[in-house]
Amino acid sequence: MPSFIVHFAHYHEDFCLAELEALSVLEGVKIGYNKTSYSLDSPILLIDVESPALAEKLVRRAILIRSISEYWGNGSTYDELFAEVKKTPERWQQYMQCSFKFSVEGFGRSLTQKEKVAVIESFSFLGFQGPIKMKSPDAEFFVYEDYGKSDLPFPAEKPKHIWFGRVVGRGSRDLVDKFDVKKRKYLGNTTMDAELSLVMANQALACPGSLVYDPFVGTGSFLLTCSYFGAYSMGSDIDGRQIRGTAGFRRGVDGIKANLAQYQLAGRVLDTTVFDICRNPWRSGPMFDAIVTDPPYGVRAGAKRLGRKNGTVPEKSFRIVDGIENHRRDDYYPPTVPYEMSDVIADLLGFAAEKLVVGGRLVYWLPTVTDEYDPKDIPLHPALRLVANSEQPFGSWSRRLITMEKIAETGPANVLSFLNKAEHEPAHKNFRDKYFSKFESVSPTDSQ
Image (cartoon, rainbow, N blue to C red; front, side, top):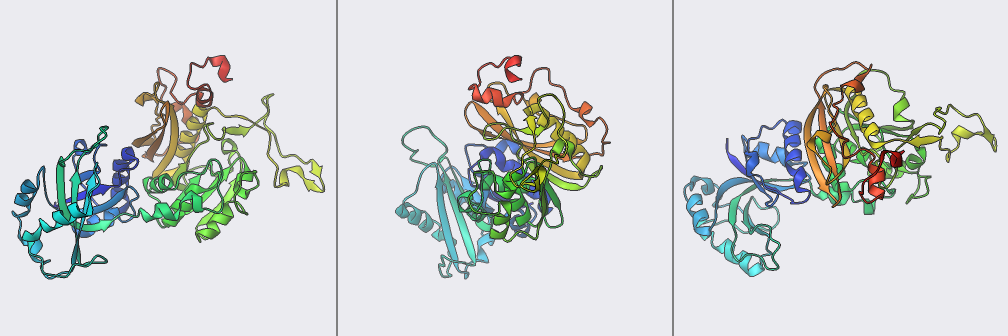
């Protein structure tokens, strides 16, 4: 298969391959590449795809990919690069009379305009005779100088590697600006960053005809991004005030509805409901193509479930205030008790194992303590296959984007008994207590 140069945005580097592989599944485009050739220190990856048309299709909704180019050559110097390019003169003959442009970029060093012009002129041996056209040319050529990442105050004088090719497709990084939370009419203290929300929609394979559910919907970030890609979505939360925009941190009116109107997505969001996911009303059996969520882990909002300190679960209250049944008031919030993080995740996997269709995906965030993390901490389930585990570090702690795929049916009874049991406490257990104690040792009695 022909080779193509993938130019990543070099943001969230640990997420790039996971998104690329998800796009391969989503678009039905087979790719081949050497995983060991990808480095977090470089935004370039060489992959094999059957054709330029399929390469363009592969990246058209990518968030972490800037462009993909048909591979024409590479080298540690321009002499090496030119020698390889000249081996296949048939490649450039068809572009002799076309309008064209060159894009010259550097990684690890900013190139001056004078340097870019010199690079472009060095390719004069190609003999292109068509007009230069900076907007919408017939052909665009990509030159990339990779100087590498460095902690030194001054960049390297010469590039470590140079890549050259013809651009055949671009990602959808413009969507990061479109869904920028600063532009959103309604948001809260748990609203997810737009870029990562979009990446999660790709990881979940959200597409026209699929049904996506967020059991901790909050202010609805994932409803927006998944629905934008054509999926039908729905969400629930134990706190209806966040959904309605009456929790005291709103910006705008009408809560989630304001954002749906802003992005003209109301027709794809089926509903938002209020209940405790531990006591959900859904029928038994599979029904969702994807579950995409950010479980509350206590940094900005603590997880809660229905209950009282005495251990009972509150039922519907018929107390009447100002002529309105208490549980029907917009500002009503039922009695709740803390919901420990490891219990949240265990319940989430059990729920996904039952409610996802086979082939459906669970995409969720898992917080971990950096010094305590062990790969064995990732909860497993026999009905779910781990697809990706990408880390976003914050120093003493990280959050990991976990993607799992349902591979087999499981009965609703006792599904949690199949969860793996780590030999030690997972790094996300009692995470809220660890976070607010600045990750000092927390005794079992302290976490109650």
